[in-house]
Image 1 (cartoon, rainbow, N blue to C red):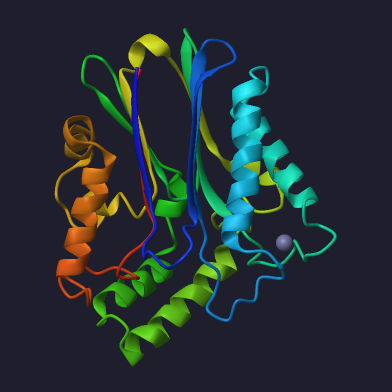
Image 2: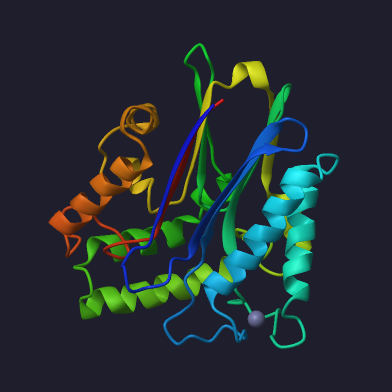
Length: 282
Ligand SMILES: [Zn+2]
C-alpha cells in the first residue's frame, strides 16, 4: 500500500477550502478517503451562515469520513446523506440553511476492503481508477459537465476575457448569476450543502478490488494540469502522480499559473485555486 497526498491553498494567506482525509486501515481491513472542494462564497459574503467554508468542510469532512470508515453496512450515498444531516444540525439554529449560498462542497469518497472498491463522486471533483492491466476509468459527475449551452458560452466568455478586466468582472457576474440559478435545483447540478436528499444525485459504483491497482482523487485546482494547461491526458496525470507524487503535480500547476498570471494563454476563472490530490496504490 502506498498513499501520497497534497492539499495546497491557492494563496498562503487565504484559508484552504479543500480538505483531504484518509485512514488506514478502517474497520474491515481496508481503507477510506474523502476529498472535498468547498465552494467559494460570493464576493458580497452573503451566505445566510455565520460560519466560514473551512468551518463547514472540517465538520462535514470529519462526519463523512467517520461514517465511511466505521459504518461499512451503509452505502456511501447513505453515509453522505447522514453526514449532510449531522453537519446541518451543527448550525441549523444559528444559520439560514435554505440560503442558496449556504456552505457547500464537492465530494469524492472511496472505501475499500479485501473484496471491493466503492466510490462516490458529487459535483466537479474527479476520481481516476486504474486496473492492473492498464485500463483507466475516469469518474465524473456528468451533470456538471453537461451545463446548458448558454451557460457554457458564458463560462467560455469569462475565460476568454482578460483576467480581472472590467469586462471580465461583468461576464463573471453574469456567469455566476446563471450558475446560481442551476445550483441544487432540478435540471441543474448538485453539491453537498444542507439537504441530505442530494445524496441520491451522487455518482456511485463498486468495483472488485482485483480490478483496481491504483486510484487518485483530485479537486479541480489540481486537474488544471490536464484540463486547463494540457500537460497531458488523465493517463499522463496518473503517471506523474506515480513517479513524482501529488506535490510535484500541484507544483507544476502553480508554476504554470505563475507563468501566466493574467490568464492570457490559459483561460481560467481565477489565477490560483486550492489544489488537492491523493494517490493510492492498493
Ligand atoms: Zn452556519
